[in-house]
Image 1 (cartoon, rainbow, N blue to C red):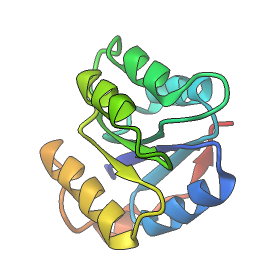
Image 2 (cartoon, helix red, strand yellow; image 1 turned 180 degrees about the horizontal axis):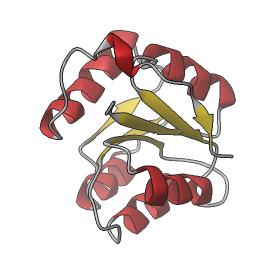
Image 3 (cartoon, rainbow, N blue to C red; image 1 turned 180 degrees about the vertical axis):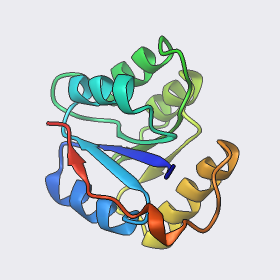
Length: 137
């Protein structure tokens, strides 16, 4: 079964770009926190790329809610703002790391591959694992 990556960001173009970068995996997307949590409950992604600042439920709120799930995905925060206090709070809540926007394709791939390895994933996806993206919101 292919590994699932959930991309949660209110920027549609970023969701689409990251979906293309990780198209060898099952890519799930959500534009806001509530939709992300609903997807997580059903799909159980191994990796979550989570925007820190979104309208409605913030990335920190979503991260706090993830602590209540019966499984623990590797969560990496995405932020366009280098706010050290928020980054530390995200790490306290269980985020593995955070990456500031804009980031390079190489940087985001490195982070996701580290999370997949940590969760038992393979570094190179099997070509048979390519799937269609799902939009959660």
